[in-house]
Image 1: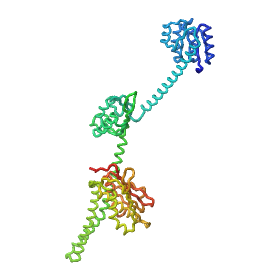
Image 2 (image 1 turned 90 degrees about the vertical axis):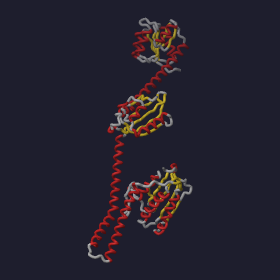
Image 3 (image 1 turned 60 degrees about the horizontal axis):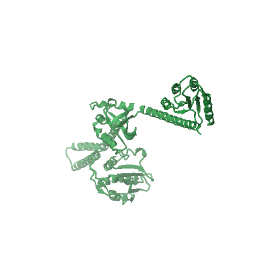
Image 4 (image 1 turned 30 degrees about the vertical axis):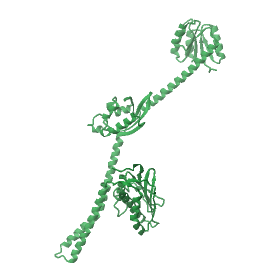
Length: 501
């Protein structure tokens, strides 16, 4: 049974009103009746009806006039016209005027029941559609509010035209809001044009669904305005917009963050430069002081009127000491140059087990004399890869030397572990010791030039090791181990097993 509805019957024939009311009451509907147009409009103003049966011919008003008034007063009410004049012209006029349907007298029960059911079903569907449309409008409005007030620039490109821009996007591109994407390329910094063009071509060709990059623009459109330059972070994605392919572009102004990042980089370089300068000064000061002392002593000896054999021998010793101090200074300068201008690796296809084993062979005798036990665990299934065996060996020797110095500080068992293995597409070489370990607070600093915790250390060895591994497109990390010592791990990517040009 159709859900109960509020129905109004408007007819000046009492028998019609009574008959329809009885039939509709029996079907469970709530029915009211009236006999004039004025009374009908008054009822509709006082109460909300779902359905109105309206006689075309009433004593005070024409049915079509009442229908027009109902359309103004209560547009959502469905009206079914009823009349004894069964002409096609009348039915067509009724439908054109906004009536839902048309019934002729005498009204049959089957026709009435079917018409009411169809009308109420239509009303329910129409209400559902209206609610859906209202919800959609509300959702679109909320979405539009979010987009319009977003601090991120948002635009939509379709058919090579910009068809939408939010206010933030217009602010970023204020001087060229209506130009095409191809024209926008002229406002991009020359050094960034190629990567932006590459991303755009990849999207429109369908090779990628989403791309992300950063680039610089000149909002004024002129490269001469260097102070006008802005950094933008961009993400572009393919999507469907109103049934057609489009590109959704999000842009964020990252100029301030880039400026801060540049400032931090400069600051970091200045700190490193200061540490390097302090390290060089420290390394040179002692031998230079010795040279000055020897020269003063030599000057005093030369003041003697005669130079006996002992004086000459003493002068020879002084010259020898001066040469030694000079060599120390030269060694410091060489280490600095090695760090600042490292040689290009001579790459060849090798097993990384070889430099690890060779480093052990070279240090084995020294390790035995110092009572250090060595455990070697090599993965003989390691893939061959390109590398400079001598440089990798130099890095491993440096790590072994640091491990020995660390273990000399402890009276506990001295044990060194050398290991090779593959993990996460990396070839890994590790050097682990049972020394005093490296405090977490300085682990990020130990690779800085001239940073050292040793009184007799130069602080350049790990910096050079890091440079060598970086030249191999790898990484070197440090962590603690189960014995409280340190474990250094060299990671060399397997997928980059190609000769570095």
